[in-house]
Image: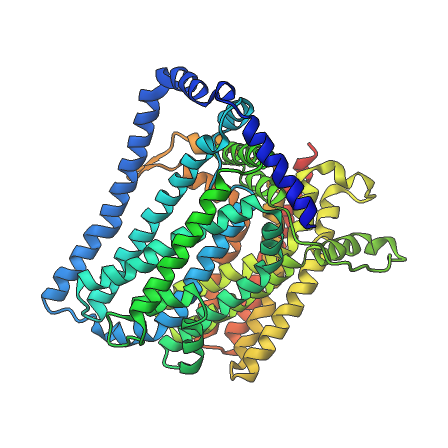
Amino acid sequence: MSTTAARTGERDDERDASWAEEDDWTEEALRLLRDLRSPHRRKRAGQIGFTVYCVLLILVVWGVLPGFSLFIKSSMGADYTVHGAAILAALPSGVCALVLGSLLIVARDALWRGPVVPPRDSADWLLTQPVRIARILLPWFWLSCGASLAVGLLASMIGMVTLGLTVKTGLAAAFAWCAVGGVCVPLLATALGVAVEAYESIARWVRAATPYVSVLVLALAAQSALAAAGHRVPWLERIELRSGPWGWIGIAALSPTPAAVPGGPIAAVLALAAAAAGIVLARRAAGSLPLATVRQRSRTTTGVMAALLTVELRTARQVAAGASGTPRPARLTLPAPRRAALAVPWRDLLALLHSPGRLGRALVLTVLSVLGAVVAAGAHRVGGLAATAAALVFGYWAVAQLLEPARLETDDTRRGSWSPYPYGGLMLRHTIVPVALGLLVSLLAAACVALLGGGVRVALAPAVVPAFVAAGLVNACRGVSKQHLLLSPAQSPTGSVGPVLFLAWYLSGPLVAVAALTVPFVMALHTPTAAHLALTACVSAVVTAGLLRWAYARAGKLLA
């Protein structure tokens, strides 16, 4: 092993030694590229300036002005300190969840895109010339660092305002300590993204670790919510705060508050040192990325952007998912059915077993839906309505994870050429497995809630599963994207209604289901009488029948 590495190093040294002064055309290539782009430079500068202007306008309108108004209200006697104790209790595990979640998102993004991705023209033309690769790639690395730092500093300002209003911490001290996380988290995330982009072994580790880290992030978020409600676990919080950079940043954020943890300066120094070391290592890796990897990611990014600009959202998601790769599928098999009627359910169940990530996401979203329903049962008026709608949205989202085989069927209608059924009938048979699995999961969730004293309300969970499956099937059969809706001439006092019409078409199934079930759900959650539960079940049955008929009609038009 060491002999091979030594020979590889010798070959690298020989290649570097053979790169003479006359072989380096980096400056000439870059000069030619600047000359070719000079006619379009003013247009490009205008686009960048307009984008910066829009971002600053949004920050001022939705950030600075509301922040000033809160401080003015505080100076006039408004008391926000009543929330201070809950925020301080939620900070330790909440910061850990936020940091780990940010690192996971950036690592997953780097599986198909990454922090170092030059435009396709640079990747396809410039990198094929005799140029120094580092001169081309490092500017994009530093651009990613700068963009992530801007987001981190914005988060630091939000933390400063929150601590200043609720804990009465000095703004300068609050910003300085929050900026430790605002600087370290973006830099660590960028360094991790470069490592994923540069080393396939790290990319494989990220794919394998994603479900476990996701569960950990959700557990930390749940712990944070419980701590805010008064159920803290101090010994567990101490372990989390000292477990790594995600905890050191939490210690730094708590330093200017009454809940300060000993060792704040040491934690800040350790976090900054970790970020600095990560950036140094990432810079070395960014300057020597494999050219094949850079070209592939650049083309993938171009394909995703093209799909987004044409509002082909599923195509964009498929392109990104195909480029990022998936963990090794589960090696599970099912015996082939002896009855032809079971062929479609067998295929659907086998497809879901080979993509366990969808089953995991369905379980997590089911938990979020149940939690939303619990919150809705204790809230009233607007809060109860909003919590009920959120619970229904999470419930639909959970069921939609199980309908991927139906969506794959409609991506290419030739897939169903083997079927003896009419295409609409084939699509209806794709609902058997999602309904069965959805009812199973909802019954398990209902049993857990019933053991905790949920009462007869638990019957609502399985009652809405068929309606959500039917809503998902309507969306799966929507067909080619109706981009012309975006250009609709219809106007409203706030501008064109084209985007609203497109979203209404794109999300027609779940919008109908959630809108029809929200009011009966609110009534059944707050007054769980037999009449209200029966009304909810009847509404769900009617909605299910209507949506299935709609999906059947849409499926028939796909072959027209």
